Length: 228
Image (tube, rainbow, N blue to C red; front, side, top):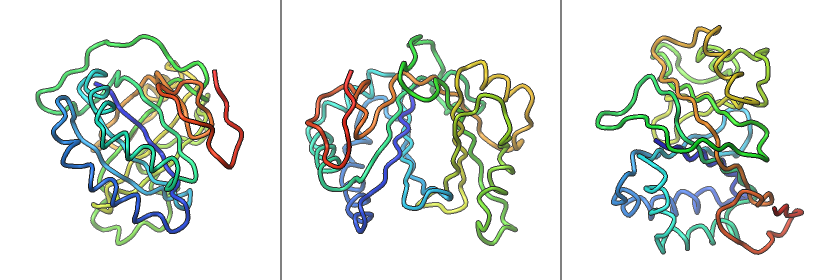
């Protein structure tokens, strides 16, 4: 299985445009063979940032989606009009303690990003306890999900709350390499009700860093573009 970890920062006032675009694409997305799910979250520590996390049976399924005309048009609009910035990581799920029914983890890609800050991501998600009336402290939420801020070779982390189902939290931790992620999993005790996934990042790129992007776009305004 593959994950697409798509973090976006809409321009001021473009939040609704982004959600409208996503809503428009949803029916076509669900028709793509191999599509598993797609959930959007808002960051609790980075103002305005959104995580769109989609999962796919295999990389071929993701490629099928990339070739759809409406998706391509939405990409252009997002890049040119809606997003102030974005960061996109694509990778193979190498571990999952709650694999969806009818799916399995199979080895498909052994290569890793050569330019990203880390080659591995851990995703930990669970529903906030009902006695918590609201999310007031993102750091408490992150530690509840299993964050160890002093873990060796962790390059960054963020915690998000689901847009449509508030209270469904997800912790995203980036690691220098697989060994660091494995060491964390072996020595930490994440929430026993949480779903825990590990993703080997194959491609890591953004609006201005195009070194591992699978398609060409002209340089975006507002920053220097890096190319391979």
